[in-house]
Every structure is written in structure tokens, then in C-alpha cells.
Image 1 (cartoon, rainbow, N blue to C red):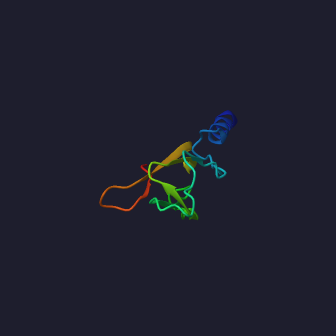
Image 2: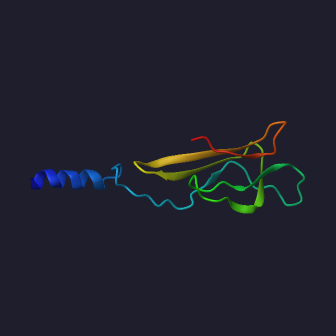
Image 3: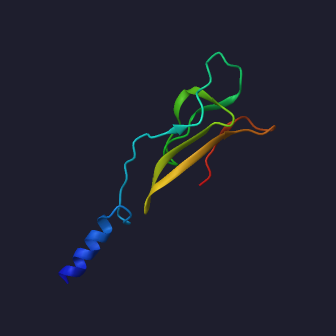
Length: 101
């Protein structure tokens, strides 16, 4: 009984265990620089939040269409997941961040 309990505790505490909690710092990787305030180029305002329900950050900055941002997110049993967002626009829409799941 003790051996079985020990195995369950060790499995649950491992890096990929289902009880793993993650607290990633703001490790954003950007493929571009923010546009200068004087630029008339359209772009995405701010950066998307780190987790899917977080509010936008850096809301006073604008990023060019085509810019990408990547950073880790905590998805329960998948603590090493990443979120990759792209600043995109079409002829009918203003630029915005697209973050497929």
C-alpha cells in the first residue's frame, strides 16, 4: 500500500503530472518592434494577454501587421504549451491579434 501511494505522489509531482501548476513569467518573444508613435501605419494595439482570459498589455503601443508574439501559457496538464499570435488584417477589417488555440 505504501509503495502504491509513493508511486502516485511521485507521478503527480513530476513536471508533466496532471497536478502540475505553472507560473510562467512574462517571457514574450516578438518578431518585430512597436511602431513609432509618429507612424501612420495601421497595426495591432497592445499585446494579447498571456493567458487566454488575460487583458491586453502594452496598450499604448502599436505593432505592424505581420508581427508575431509567442509566449508560454499554462494549460493544466500541458504546462509547456505556447501561445502564438499574429497581427493580421484583411481588406474588410482593422488589424487585430489572431491567437489560434
